[in-house]
Length: 133
Length: 260
Image (cartoon, rainbow over all chains, first blue to last red; front, side):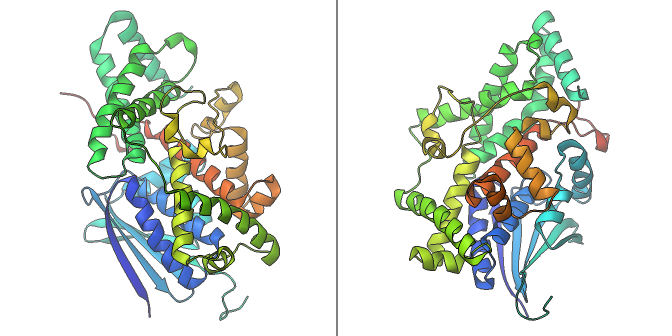
């Protein structure tokens, strides 16, 4: 079972804050630490800064509360553009998108939907009672 | 020296020494992504973006026209403050400024302190609920105040220190929490192109976070600054890298844009 909020925003930095607030609001329900929340926000911004959105001037962010974590999906990106970005970035920047997402999230994947690429990433809440460890 | 830089210098020479206007045109095109990236940072309304891109282009053109090829500085380094300066002037001429309600600013400063206290007390990073309780405000207020701090972080990634333009647009700098360095030194040339635009502290923090895998609160302890400051530095460093690599031509795709 999961609760989800979907936001479609103009692809402009001024709207990232709106997404941050919604992500924060959902993270608060999960009792995510500030550390973890900020990780998610930084990962999200890195994705939003990618210059390959296929959906015109808008970007869609889906934020889901699945058990024990936050699920974010961002898109639609031009098919293949992200794979290119993931490779190119790491050479150029030293801290590329792939390294960022690997460090900041519990896991991420690229999925194809309606002819566009969507990045789905997950942040699990550490130490939540349940599957101890 | 990387390919783009060499290419830039070549185009700049053609323009400055031989008055080749096509070379100037190509430079402008090449740096348009940088202008867009910077304009996006300041466009708090969607419709503002195109205006800011236009204005930013003026800054870019000025930078190209005034650039001294012999100075051993990359065009990006020189153009970025010019573009931002022009955008800020636009805001100032319009009489707009980026201001945040006083209450949120104060709450942000208070939260930074509480976050440190709670991190020590709980031996982990606090949750939003814990911060709200400690500050005696609603969770929504906490989120909004934290967001306010981040908005400052991106806005203050801007002109060189001592710049004459629109310093009023940088509330965080006026709070004295961020210093800005624009240095170009030899040793950076050996790093990945993106990393050499960072100062030593930014590079160290990125390394601790992304290569050593420390959390923000662990970095805060080790470096001796607040976690919020770590968060801002990480964002600022990543933005600098993004701006730096934004001007790279997309060689991988093999379909370079050629005019005409």
